[in-house]
Length: 108
Image (cartoon, rainbow, N blue to C red):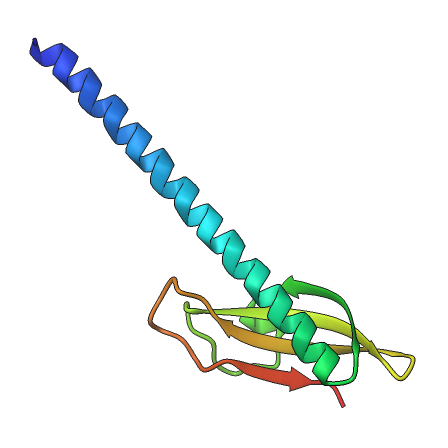
C-alpha cells in the first residue's frame, strides 16, 4: 500500500472517529437534560406546584452567586395557588469537576 492511500485511510478513519465521539457526547448531554427535566417536574410537584416550563439560563440571569462549568442552571416556571411563579435550579453536569452543589431557589 502506498503512502498516499495510507494517508487517506488515516484521515477518513480520524474523521469517522471524531463524528462518533461528537454523536456520543451529544446523546449523553441530551439524556442528561431529560433526566434533569424529570427531576425538575418531580421537585415542583413535591413543592405543591404544577410544572409549566424550564429553560437553561446563564449564571448572570439567575440568583446564584456561584456556578462552575460543571453546573447547569435552569429557570423553571410553575403554577401554584393560581399564580405563575419562578424557581431556579442549579444542577450537576458531568462535563467538569469544577462545580457547586445542586440547589433550588424558589420565589416566595
